[in-house]
Structure formats: structure tokens, C-alpha cells
Length: 133
Image 1: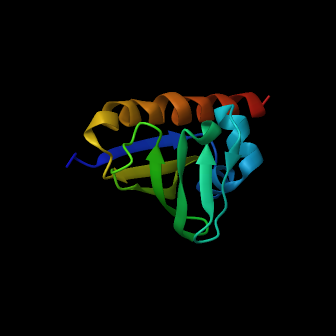
Image 2 (image 1 turned 120 degrees about the vertical axis):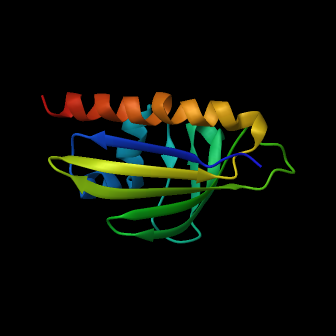
């Protein structure tokens, strides 16, 4: 079993706004540049990047916590879904997101670890900077 992926990012927006942005399919898609299906409703399907990422919403506490079952197209059929936990908190003038991603299989561990920065944190920073102008 792999170690949990633990990451932390501070972004230039209130934590409550970051939470809503993650769960808004149109804004989420604008951030990542790819269509997204997402909802805060427990049991609802999650899909991003044309199905490269998929899973279900397990639990959410507005505006602080998102828990999803999560898998990528690099998971093998016999690999169980991983569990993604995102917590949102104020951090001065910034919003802070703490990520804990548990159960990512070995063959996708590096890709998922680096993918959070490449496909989420960096595009999210850019989106927020561009929307301030």
C-alpha cells in the first residue's frame, strides 16, 4: 500500500469561495480546461478530464470539507477506488486547501502526486489571478 498523498496550498480567494468553485461544474471546468461532472450531493457521480478521473461524492460539509471516492484511468480494474479528502480553511487573506489522498495504487502514485499541482493548483492560481483583472 502506498503512503497517503498529503498536500497543502494557499490560493488568493476566501476558503468558502474555493469550496464553491470546486463543486461548481462550470467553474471547475474553467479552472482545469476540461468538462467536469460534480455535485455536493452524497452518492453523486464525479467525472473530470473526459472520464480520466471518476468517482462519487461520499460526503461534504459546506463550506469546509469534500470527501470523494476517486480513481484515474491508470488504476487497474482490480484496484479499489482511492479516497480523496479536501478541507478548506481561511488563511489570512487567502484560502487554504489541505489534501489527503489515500489508497492511490503504486502504478499511478507519482502521476497523481504531481498531477495535483499540474492540473489543479497551478491552473487554479492562474484562474484566480486572471479573474482579478
